[in-house]
Length: 314
Image (cartoon, rainbow, N blue to C red; front, side, top):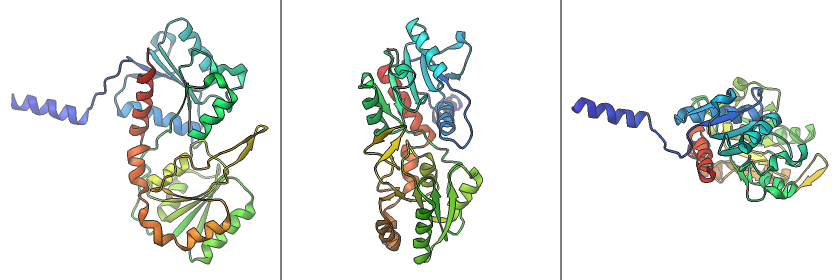
């Protein structure tokens, strides 16, 4: 009897079961390319559902469709899910965050009444979507994908460098940032967006005391979260405005999930110079990995997504 009770207790500890009204989640997604944002979102959802032991499948045959649908990407996938909702095959439909760049594309398909929730990566994107498609107001939710905190974990290497993550703006700004770092005795190591592999990025992070990110905007900023998971705080260029596809956006964020525990922002080189010069005086306030473990792990991210599904399930 004691052995039986012990087995039950061990099962409950290592194999937690979460109870939701929906029976099964189906994920629809186009093929995604590794190291791009949509791949990170796909990995987050797939792995999070596995970790939490939620019944799910991905791109199944029609007969295997669950009652709650998440369309991560693909306009045709969204059209198919909308038809299922109209025909009563499913009860809950979430669309996003990588279906289209703006919700007014494809004749406002994303704003169809069958879409219970339009998922977007962050608050500023939510505002922009509701402005572009007023019919979506009240149905847009922002949700961040998680990162693999086991894979993106700090090593024991000596941190004598500073990562310079260059995504946008001219080469001149990047070079001036690197000059400032050298001025105060730091060794900058540049990583250029879309031209690095995961192992290179991870290796530079392992050597970095902090990172300087140069990007005009980020819908979420998964690379930032990967740095934080490695316990590398970030000093992020954040000009606050963007012109994209003929539209000006304001306010805009280049680091939507940055907090006092993960880094600071700057708009001008003078601000960055002060931050670099005084880094040691405020560095103790950062605890970026702890923040990611609580808010942006695969498990934490998927729990938030499932709670959203549960809240609108009918």
